[in-house]
Image 1: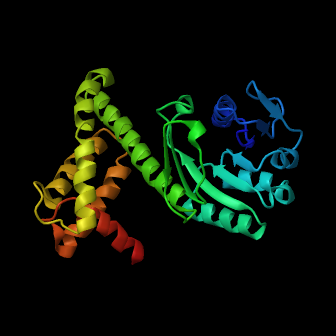
Image 2: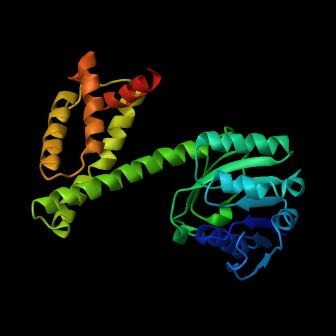
Image 3: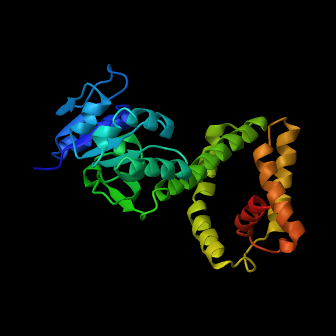
Length: 281
């Protein structure tokens, strides 16, 4: 028989996880703090978190953050002892490691994970789930299951880095539309050209990633001095329309710091090291 699994948390993502496990043939028990949330067909609802944890050798928790997760797990610590806990939530790498330490203190085997794709992807080839700590089989969730090693903080490390890229990019889109509309350019007219800019990003990611890891910054097609000048023009234009340019001002200040340190002729990849340097200072 396929291993029984418990899912704690029946928000949209938790519901999708439970449905995928049940569809794959796992006897699936669910529990949610708000009892009115529905449970997927073919699953069994437990009366408490403790009862849910006791029902399966493996419990998957999908709540809003680590604080909520710890509050719920405290109700089921005794039942989880000797069992496997998988936490699929969002938060800092430090929070993942702290929860792993809590689990170890309670005799619980621990896996920390991050889901990188939307609810609709779960159970399909499009799903991407990262996990670290104790390796676990999450094939029922579909798609790509990427194990990142024994450090339980690694999955959250990947998660925050990738979400940083996503939300910073979205902030750029929002700001560029505001800039366009200030010049009477409809966002819908800018969008096709903006997509062309977006198509450059995969190349930029590879290029900067390779340069950073090789610590090679001196032979780029552009340089920090030029980049800083371009940023200054955008800041001037934004502020002439009273559009907040604080995000780009922060980037410009970082570039200026690197230029003042003698790196004006370097590629923009130098700014990753400059961020690390300023964080240490």
